[in-house]
Amino acid sequence: MKISIRPIQRQDEAVWRRLWAQYLAFYRKTLPEAETSCTWRRILDPASQLLGRAAVVDDGTPLGFAVCVLHEGTWSAAPTCYLEDLFVDEANRGEGIGGALIEDLLGLARTLGWASVYWVTEADNAAARRLYDRFGLADGYVRYRIYTQPSR
Image 1 (cartoon, rainbow, N blue to C red):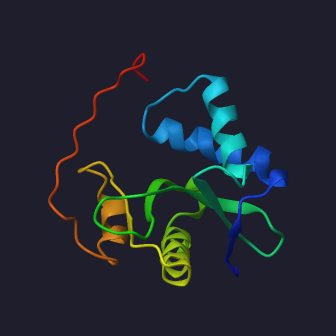
Image 2: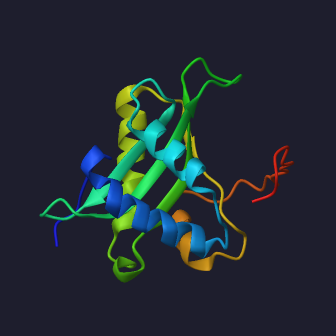
């Protein structure tokens, strides 16, 4: 199976929504439909700071996705990429798709001059951490999050 990475496209919506639902279930989260629809619209909006990438097979069917936020920072004039969401279809795990999505983002970072790419995961997500450790080790920072809207 040949995997390629490309921007998420309008025709990917049904498959992306199926994968998104799996992703939310994995993290035991629910989102209102309005939030999912908003995310989808922003992924497709060229003016948005969200960047969506799809890992596809020969027939163009997405098997995984990465959704990133490009943002300014204080330690570099170049933009920074926060890989907020990375997910591979449960049926296709272990086939190199997650690694290909990360490699794609690192390639974009080098080509487009981003300062860095970073992400977070749950401390006990051993499978993901095995993949992530191939790219670099966790930096030891602890994240604090305060929700100012109703809890998800």
